[in-house]
Length: 386
Ligand SMILES: *Cc1c(COP(=O)(O)O)cnc(C)c1O
Image (cartoon, rainbow, N blue to C red):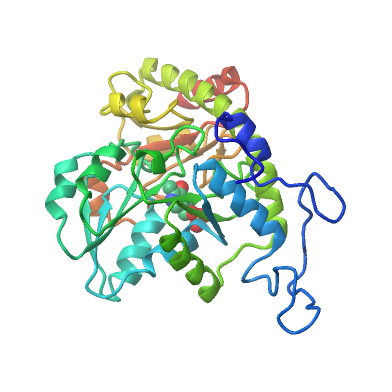
């Protein structure tokens, strides 16, 4: 990327990634090119743009920024996170096998089992925290390994470099959903992953005003295949959304700092509260795989899950409905704090038996700490917990 330097820190990269002055006017922000088509001088002679499904200057600038954030050359924007995942799955054929984490975003699992399994793709759901479980499910037909770290909602940590090492010499791509960590905290491509995916809807956008997805890769061939699906299926974001996300990205490292600080303060409070049973936050020294998180992440983020000693839906409902700073809503990663109940909300599509084995219990509550003042977040939860 011409406009950024390899040795810049994340704060500098985020501000300058993809931001070239507009060639026509020098505008420091890439304009919102609200145009579906581009006039050609003569047949086939144009300025690099023909039709906005294929490419659009505002989207191009954002896609360059995506690549810079994950330290690679190729970034792609999609109309949602699931559309981005869908593009990766479209590179598979019937009979191909996928090893997937067993604690994934509910919609990801639904896409795998309700659509691609019907098309003949074979899925093995394993606990990717256990690298030997990944190795055990691996064979010549494995084409893709899909994992999240930290996971949603149990915050489990997978050693990404160790999984990449297991795939060495195999013809399988490693894709990491990096939505929870963001490139400000974790860069999976540097740990050996082939594809990074984001629900941009969450931290990258950061302001709860856009639904979008992204894919990043260092591999030009993989990029070409994904880019073909982006254009063939057409699940692309509009220019105004691209502008808003590009603006959001500039403050990503700054926001993440506050999310992490608030995460630490809230986790410490929850650990000390008598009504709280387990606190799931990778920054806690006794959290399973805390060492791996400390090694592959710069900090531990603002996503926390916790359970209550009174493990009932009624008790969880009281907490979720009792906050005033934390808004009761699905989604995460925005500047405002959110609280939700996975079993009844985000993970309602996961069959009850699977929820039980995974540990998505009746009282499990997931919070996304925003960038408000930590004291206000703690006071709000204190009131709601009674
Ligand atoms: C929200 C989310 C998705 C899906 O993204 P959308 O933008 O809602 O389509 C995928 N993975 C994770 C971890 C998410 O939180």
